[in-house]
Image (tube, rainbow, N blue to C red):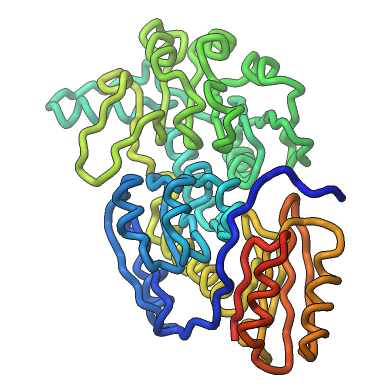
Length: 419
């Protein structure tokens, strides 16, 4: 394999950090269970309720080893350039499009997320909104709060026997498929990848095929750039007249101005959105959208995964991944690093070496260790794209001269001595 053209930041070798010296910064109201888990391990944990701007984060991240964010704090190249102590980032959510993943690789910073923990919460919200839109419950509730009694069946429908079209058949889309079918909906789906249909769901070859037959369309796509503007005027025109539309995935995927036009024309009978192209950064900030005030439109403040159960699970899950990486070098389920599942408390002295994925790196590392009389007791190597990751257990603490020689290798991205 040839060397990748991507340039990498090279860090000074990092020696063992005692637990009480590990600094953690958790932003955006991450569940207290995550903070408590890390505090109980002896870490210094600072929590903040809001997201931070780039400049604010650069100031706050000084000396921080582990960073926890949700969906509104953006991790840029500039932030990483100013965070030489940062070892890992935990996205306490599903998505990682708020993180410059390529930059984290260049800087040797591991990234972890929670791809499964809030799946059920999002699915339950989708089901609730499908039924609410079909029955026009939001409009009826608003009228009642305004003192208007309007007992009428006009425009209210059962969901049984209707067709649900799911765009994006990943963890959330596929579970929604199963529950919707149990409610009596027929399910069709479209995904760019070849996904196994669950139950009686049927795969469509194109989005247009799905739109032509669906009474309800629900988006469950990720934040990759190719999904920006995925659903605009053309797709809405292709929907069945008087169908319903949901987006609980990514705000950038939908043209909300076009959606308003189709709602006002009556072509789309109702919509529910939990995500928006631009969202407020902090609790209480004003929310602006073309969809405010449109009848039979449910707007929620990005709460698809915001249940106590989901946030508790996410807090514990991601915090444990950060701890395992900081303590033992484990990268199981990392978004960016090669995956190694290692004993959580190494009895030996351990070296973790992140490097360019190039031929001969492992042999060179072992030659250096052998030349210095370092006995290798165990070793694991994995590669992923442009990165390689090797963890070596040795019989005695490695001297500073050995660490400097390993760090000086042209392939080295980051070197840590863990114990």
